[in-house]
Length: 181
Image 1 (cartoon, rainbow, N blue to C red):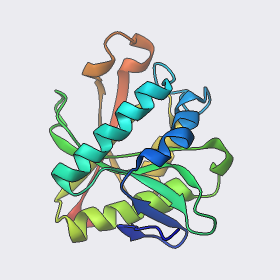
Image 2: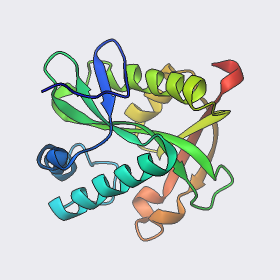
Image 3: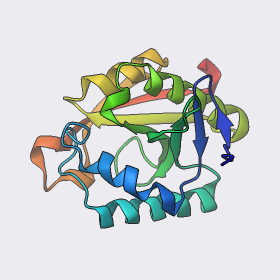
């Protein structure tokens, strides 16, 4: 089956979500290691709702946290992409970059490769001026990706959507501007 990618990097294809993605995405979101820096794993129903949210975001904005596949074997490995965030902090509203990948592909540089390609798409195709990325303060792997793609740390904050989960509430924010890209 031919895949309709919105754009590609050297090894990855980025596309909108389909209902056929639910099984693999639900497995990813149920993995305790993958979800280590989140308050809880997600049920299949919650994963389906998240796919619907991503699809709606794409329809409204022309971008989302894209379903991301390897070009070599068309395996859905998770998501890498962009989403408009409006939760209340000194850094928002802003376009956020995020990623969540299956652990069997960790260590292959996919998050860094995909994040760079999403920045290129955001700055060149969407004409964004800046992009932020956030993670919990303990998530050193995500923070390392932010550094590798040229983002600069701009501060720490208590995530307003994580108030009920104090162990995850303290987060860091990185930013990159189009003019330094």
